[in-house]
Length: 506
Image (cartoon, rainbow, N blue to C red):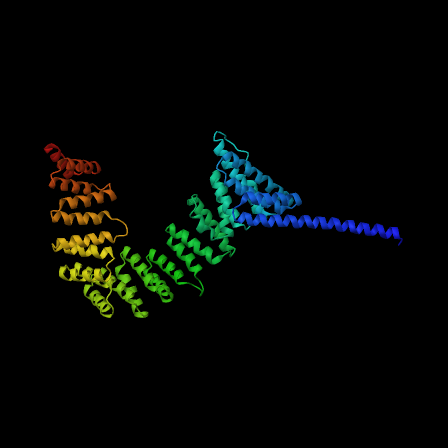
């Protein structure tokens, strides 16, 4: 090769190297600006981030990731604008950037979703700025569909589409979207139930999707479980039981699984099956006492006193029973009026280690047997062991009032009020009646006023306050209170008669 040829080749190579170096330099500069913009974006400095992105796009105008980041930043700035018109401008700019990014890379589902959210935001702003317009040029639906086409299992996209269809009032499309969402991702039904568009039609769409998920073995266990929940809400107990049994088929079941299945059987009146599953739950439960306490409330609300007593007795016999288990069993015996057996168990608990709760239930046993001496002693011991329990002080006050020990009853009522987490009108009414019996009419009136402040729709509080005013010689106040009582209960003849008497006397 001749010297001129070699010189030309070297010059060409050098030229190409310089071009490559220039391109790499621009790329490096752009990436540096993008990195800085990302840090500033995370710190909430969106304006500064945008400045770096502008420099980056100047270096690499055809880079779709930079356009995408600019769209995201403009969108954030739009959300921070107090004025709607400025927000529209920034959001439109964001859309332009996202559209350019999507043109450069039409396979990015995130950009399609961002365009959908941007169109939806522009539509809302347009409606706010121009409420008189019947139609808007913005339509997010094509972008939602494109995002879902690119990412068919994008659950977030499908949730957003469902909410968008609800806001647009497109019920038929919403039902279809929910059906598909339930089919491809059964757990979505849990969240859909909390949406404002949840309705019988949406529940049916969920059930249809869940059936297809079950047929296709998609999240099979969870699909059966959620189907059972929906059917249980509709009180279709047989179907709920069938699906939940499928959900817990196998060996890897939690205490909560057996608890739920047991409760479904209980709702359906299948008490033996309920007990079998609940015993399985309690056998492996790490919170046996709390679970048994919960079951006590459920059984007693349904009037299953004998059944719960049998269940708690088996728990007592099969497992190492704690004092709490013993206490719950004793309470079940109290419900059955088997007071002697309950008392023996509670006395045994206190013999091992006295507890306020055991003394409280002994007081309840004494109350049922109308043994006021024993009741007073037991509840007094409960208040000593747990002085911050307002309920114990209230029961102590009640038995003291019954025994005409009024000063002590008033003190215990005051302690009940001071330890009550939330002010109670009934507590103020209780103390007012004690003060009334002590002829402390100003004190009783103060309490009834407190009760009225907490429950202003109770006619009896106004009537009692009126009578306190009468005893204090305040006829005008009595008439005013009775007038309010009559207004709340116009059909109460006693209030009406007393109001007329006082008004005529005044």
